[in-house]
Length: 452
Ligand code: SUG
Image 1: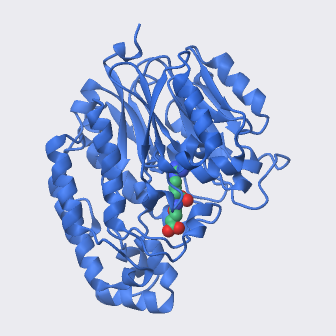
Image 2 (image 1 turned 45 degrees about the horizontal axis):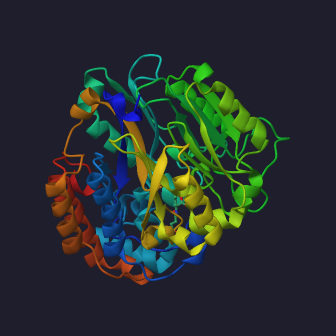
Image 3 (image 1 turned 90 degrees about the horizontal axis):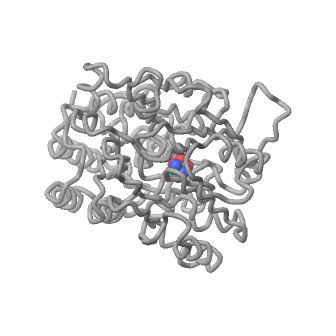
């Protein structure tokens, strides 16, 4: 039976859109690209168009991609919470004078990496038969921790009708604490024979405070806590027999692999993974092999170093299931510069024994320079047709909407942006105009603080 025959449930990529303030501010220690791009001039318009290129490609293949709107940036309320006062432009100016990094933080476009927005369990997997969404607390870095409340607001708005009809539950995030950091779907994989079948959920953590003897990274922070992953399982209403927890290899974290989605990616049973992705790697893989009821296509990279993984983001590719039942790999162009990575990709696409038949490369330079590849830029949601139809607003992009989004970007996004320009009150106005227009394009009710 072709993989696409289970038509009631489909997987949709909810793509992130960069903000008008997209920039490089070295805000994410442990993420080497973020540190290396520090202070560079950014290109917000190109960043947004590059995200739309991915969306356009998905549409051309017959997929039904959606978008998640960017958050309000600069977020003036966060500066006011730190005691800055006066008009919004005065607040921005004072904060910049005192500490430019504060303005960079509240201007960060990081919500574009929607793989970190939440962890989602489809209704076909949950014990109460409802779609479950837990927004991530993103505790580890302050510029990302700012995202949690807004992500929750967005999910509540877009799933409002489903929540009211008892078809979905939007949770509050796991409490934000040093022992309960949660980075969302970037540390979660769902294996299933078909998207509408019961899935096996694999949660990957980097640290475990209740087990001090566990191996730990020494150079970079581990972001995902075991206690948070355990809380997610409870909140998502997953049965323990459908769940596996594995620890990420701390050596990988110390090499700059700050999420599982930089070292492994799967769709259904197709699983591309580095040979030392996990602590007690073979045991972790064997557990997945044993518990997964479908056919596992284990595509292990044996001739790639962890450096190759960090430099190319090969494991941050998307594996997408096309309506014709085949799978396509969407990878960053960075992969093309590395012969070992290309050999791995070519081996996969030329092997008829796995479902991945093609690869497409994308110029995602603007996101990659902050450590975000194709997979970071999307949150996957497996939805039934009824759930999809019940969503509020215009979330799914069609050709007309794509055209509207492209010209919206051209109209509102600057071509270049220097770090000092983040304090420009004019940029604040431009950003609000852009978000106001976007909520209209998406037919969403008022979302943002400045709209309330
Ligand atoms: O959290 N970069 C993001 C990249 C997130 C990628 N997401 C996944 N792998 N799922 C992060 O490290 C850099 C921002 C800056 O430095 O300006 C940043 O936040």
